[in-house]
Amino acid sequence: MKYFATFSKEGQVIGHYIDEIHKEIPQDAVEMSKKEWEQSCQGDLIRDIKNKKWTTKPKPSVLEILNNQKISKKLMINNIRDEKIKEGVSYSGYIFDTDDKSFANLNETLTILKLGIPLPENFTWRTKDNQNIPVNEEFLIGLTGTLTNHKFSCYKKSWELKDEIDKAKTLDEINKINW
Image (cartoon, rainbow, N blue to C red; front, top):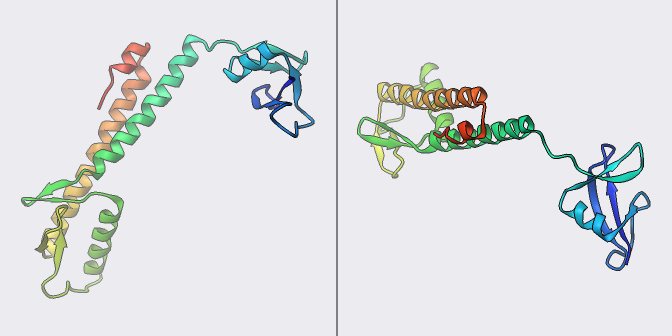
């Protein structure tokens, strides 16, 4: 049985092949020992382009690990922020949706009002739990302010947490940062 791998210009393995399994092996694939192939499958081997040989992938430095963890934590904060924004908001005794579609619908309605087009007779706005409640222009303006403040407060908190992440000097400090 023969083992092969293909790799990028930087030496990162991008494909693994075994002649008894794969009918066609790419022409640019390089043969390797079974042990090298196993290491490569674990992500522990790269191709030294200059010397044309397989070499153990260098372990990331503490700084690289820290920076990667910061990136991951910031992405997690963004995901939580987006979920918090969509949780809904309380206004005038009701809970209202706060997803992008709700913001767009509300802004569209306010734009129509600003153009001087009155609300239809018996106009209602739907709550998060699907109640249709009668509303007027003043109510919609107040709701818009509440939704905007909610969205801004979620973003503000995410910015503050990401600033803390940037200042963190250890993995433990990063791991302690939570929404």
